[in-house]
Length: 141
Image 1 (cartoon, one colour):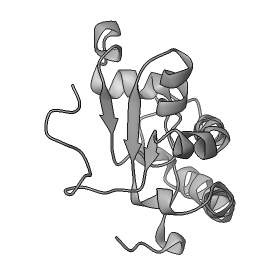
Image 2: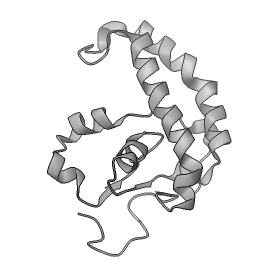
Image 3: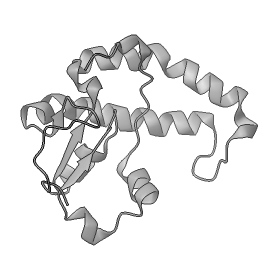
Image 4: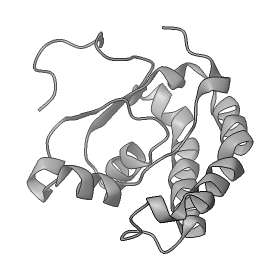
């Protein structure tokens, strides 16, 4: 598994976005969940705070929190500028503006970065990628 950090475009999502994207029910939150590729989302962090069990996998987890943070800083403004330039190509139902989108994404990534070192230690964040994951069959619900 070899990825180059300079090729990664970090863009994290939060728990509410996961609930919306996957129509995640309260009952399903109680299941053992595999999130992958998880990227720099705050889903694992937010679910763990609420007492749920999530394992997140992504090849970017081979890098340190500081390295990931540096990459976020390197590309963040460019992504927001691209959203502004392409404003009319997006549906703005969930975000008021490119600036608001950036604020939500950055908040998710900051929560991820805060949690990442502890999550790695607790084996909630694992360096892995599809299709070859290091789990037994039926480990997740």
